[in-house]
Image (cartoon, rainbow, N blue to C red; front, side, top):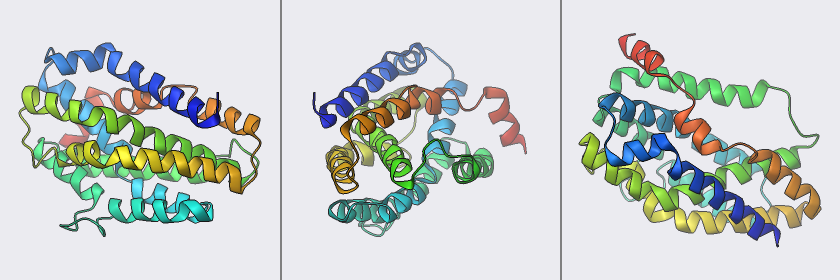
Length: 236
């Protein structure tokens, strides 16, 4: 199996685990109350609010042949290359307000800042910036791969069971449209990074295993916040 095939297989397995999760299934079938949808949305918003900064890091460390695609992705996240100029973080803020989570948004912004700060200040797992960049790239593209296959499905159950309109769900619908291309470009970027920095295949596979050893989608979308904490943030 090639490295690309191994990466896609891991992405596919993690995505399958996400949509098979009992909590995801209950959201999709409408078997839970608004609070469960709000918690899910809060976790999604927190997970992706700082994505342009992650892409900026990846662009700075990218292989030359991968730079153009990563730059385009970052500018798209910032709204520079969108027709209406709306950034993806702004779409997430629109999602929060449209779902009635506006009062919790400052707390979610702070949590997202704290998550980014932790990446910078905590001890590194790897001995080189090269390996750190590859690990971050693998996880970032994992989300694009997963969202290209699930965001339309997620938007559908949020519309039906949570009553959200198309404008509120624009972040999900956008990712259902563009992330197929981004995922393919991302897989190319991983291959080019491995080639440019002469990372042995065995080392790259180890980094893949360490990065995806736990299901990052389930961890971020279902494991970050609790109902009590979200309620407390809204009250504040």
